Length: 191
Image (cartoon, rainbow, N blue to C red; front, side, top):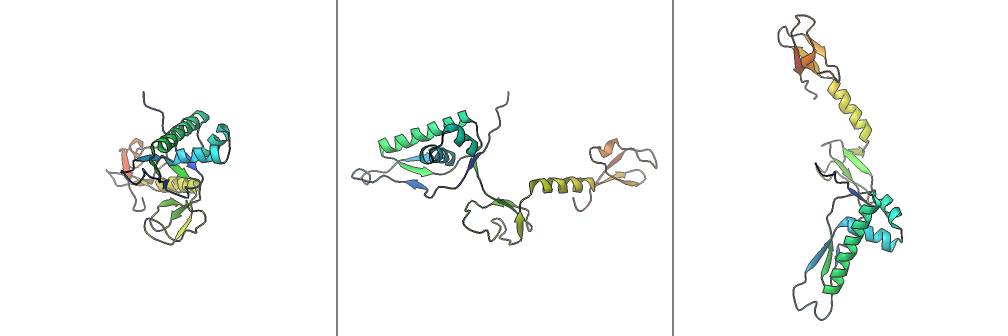
């Protein structure tokens, strides 16, 4: 039995700091150990303890179930307690997350990217540095892919007859109307 697919956690904004470091008499005398607080754990603490939301409200914002949020929140509190009691630094990074922000598509390289820094304007694609991009429209891209697949051609290898490919019908099941042979897929240049 395969495990249940992992669902990404939605984060409203990245944290304003990347961690906390202890200070005091003992802090400088020996190497400081670190605790890694994942971004979803940070978000659970922010929503439940800072924003004072209950677990149901916070789970809806993070797009996870209430029991999942409770597990994330419990892990985060345990890590913070360990850091405070043992004098360890906290580093906030990582996790299986996505930011709640606008997404864009680069017209130059086709890369999809988002803007986690909502206050700053996007100036270029992070992959190719191109400035020709637009808002990402997931359903429009699926329709374009379907139309592109439909522009393929079925070819008879015996007589060379070509006919437009029918979506959902494998070319190898098509019979050539000219000679009666089975047809194969002929890829077009735009695919």
